[in-house]
Image 1 (tube, rainbow, N blue to C red):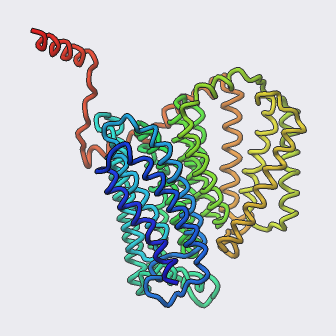
Image 2 (spheres, one colour):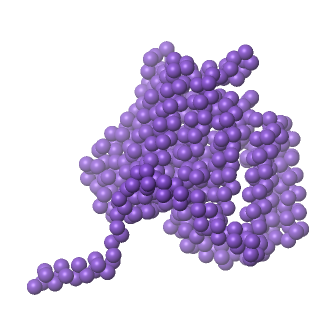
Image 3 (cartoon, one colour):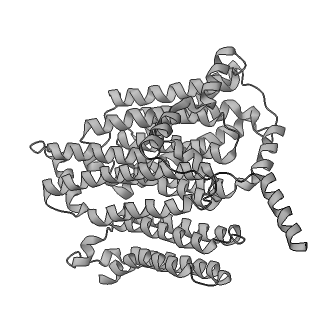
Length: 528
């Protein structure tokens, strides 16, 4: 049905037009009008999804629009975030002189994101991908007088151009090999290759798979190109929420979308397994050394993106999508709630705490393992084990550290919470797998080299985080903490290389004493 296609197309068009209007509209009318628009777009989205079953794919316009469940889930998430960001920004940005500029590029960024999500055409997908980065660059330099913000945006700008060139190269190779620009046609071919042993991928397909993996790693701020993500926290809080809750997730969306190709290119899979795996462990450990709330959240995002990419490399695309949605909702809340960080930190400091004993660790590990084994048996699960190792480690920490939780949580309560976590995790994983239909035949074999590598990473993260927290007074742990606090010096070389290849003029911070002297002189001249 033509109506469904037009409804989907109207979403990015409406956001782009609203961006043009917002910079010229009266300031007092902009926020309320955009808030009403976001509600209308959610209604349009619901109507478009409801009309999908009546769609006729014979109409030319339908070929350019993706009506997959993946697109529907992600588009709904983005529109929900749009409503939240506009409502929050209406108050947060009220006193800014350049609020019209902010609204324009915020809405242009969201328009580009929605274009990527509804695109079934490689050219439209790539143009939306580029549009996201260019619009976001304007937001990241909202305060052009801040040197750190300008330097971070400069590094992000160059890395984004590299990711776009890699993606363009991948799409060009796929077109030259298969003669089509429509994504669903390409995916259907790769699914057929996966199921038919007589067929195989070409050299162009393998190169395209590696290029897509590289583009996803850069987009998700994986080591060693992660530094800009930690430094753009000087942008307004809603921009940080947009970046961490939405834009940076697109690397995961890219791998989930091209899953039938990605899982058949071992080099691409191992590239992600190594880079994203090390990023997950290192960034999670570095995060624990940070004091600033926004910087901690930034390191957390890099680690979480690494974990999501690991799930993709293991073929657990349903779990990666669940992780993506949950992470987006959590990070949006965390950044928009950053103003309450002082109160929350005081509550943590006042909460009773003690180091878990050996018995606590033994009981916690036993209960966590029992819960997970029961879940595996109930689901009849026969896939990779590493992801369950991570769940066991997380539940062990939760149960063992119950003495450090406020309100003196007792053992039965924390065990009930742990059981609820396992049940919710299992049910949502199964539900998402049925929704996107990507789990069957795509995951790696249990106890394969990839599975063992990821399990070893998770165990090392559990051991190192526990040692740093409970044995931090020892000399060896203190040396490791110092290195982690410095970010293992991984960003310094990239910053030097960036400034050497493409220098940027950084603004000088204004000296407050000089400004006060100039203001005093101006007042004297005024009254003389």
